[in-house]
Amino acid sequence: MNQKTLIGLVVAALVAIVIAIAINHSNKPRSESGGEEQTSTYLVPALRDHVNEVDKLVLIGAENKPIATLTRGADGWSIAEKSGFAADTGKLREFLLKLADAKLIEQKTASKDKYTALGVEDVSDKDAKGVEIELGGLAQPVKLIVGTANARGGTFVRRGGEAQSWLASGSLSIDKKPENWLRKDLVDVQANRVASVSIARDDGKNVEVARQTEGDANFKLADVPKGREAGSEFTVNGIAGTLGGLKFDDVVAAEDARPGDKPLKARYATFDGLVIDITAWEKDGKDYAQFIATTDPDQAAKHIAAQQEKAKADFDAQASTQQKSATPAAGTSKEGDASKPADANANLASAPAKPPEVADPAKDREQKLAALDKEAADLNARFKDWTYVLPAYKYANLNKSQDDLLKPLDEKKDDKKGAAMKKPPTSPAKKAD
Image (cartoon, rainbow, N blue to C red; front, side):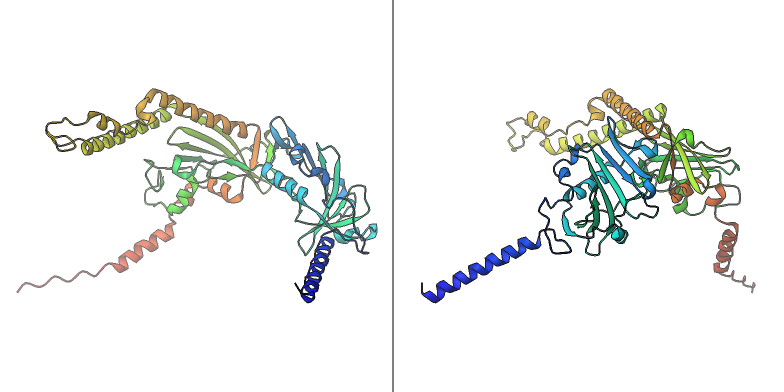
């Protein structure tokens, strides 16, 4: 190796070292005056690797008013401001993980007069834009104020007891509506499971829609008045889909939100015997509802019997098909040797496995009835003692009268008129010669 090559390698190595130092330097938190933070770069070091130890999250807004107090108990997480209703643990965990991963990027102002621009002023202020966070359950108490977002994707923050504010990595925006921290999944009974829906109204314009079999694509409107016709199938079917993936907007203790004098009452009955009764009403621009789940033993038994009958028919047909394909022609074996009998064991091995409905009908029936009872009990555990605020479009599906489901009279007249205009003129009869 000559001297010139050696010098080149040394220069390249020095350049690499300088670049590495520069990168390491740029990754450290920086202050506005050029100084560096010498402690951990994480915003909340105590939260690192200890997320599962958190048992309380308190969110406080302007004027020190609580937004939400989430606590973990024997039955999971709940929200104090919502009478102890279950919290959305997915949303909670997502926020805690973001907080645990957040790092200090850059020092910002330590001047109280400049906090407002970053949203990190004390939340005791009337117009405070930030949210104060308190975490419980950790070895060290945690308190900080989460301010506004930065254009670069970070969030301005200020830790409790410190004058120094920071730009932290990640989006730490906090939902300031307590109802949005609730677990909002309420019930999920899809329309293809529903057999009938009846709606009793105070004005007497009751509604009943139903399907004869589970295979029917559309629901039919019952008791259509003479001279009228059912309207859009989409509207009729929409009523049956109300309980599919139903999420509520808010929840109130039932004792604090009782039905008015003239609520509407709806009953959803499924083919397999689940029944859900709904009492719904409007008040102060909100749509409220209470729910009760029960079972119809007769309908459940009828449905199970039909399932078992179909399963046996399918099994018998499959077994017959396989037996025919496995049995050799009369007088011959599978190998075509007339001197050898067919292999009976091979035929037995090819028989289809019996489904539970066929193998043990009594046990199958018992298990299905138990599963249905459990479903109703689980639903009632969620329904009991609560009044739910429904999304407007879901309540609108419940709040249908028979008039809403009939074809308008003017539209019916127009249809008849159009049909008459399309009818070809009658040809005049030929005169006799």
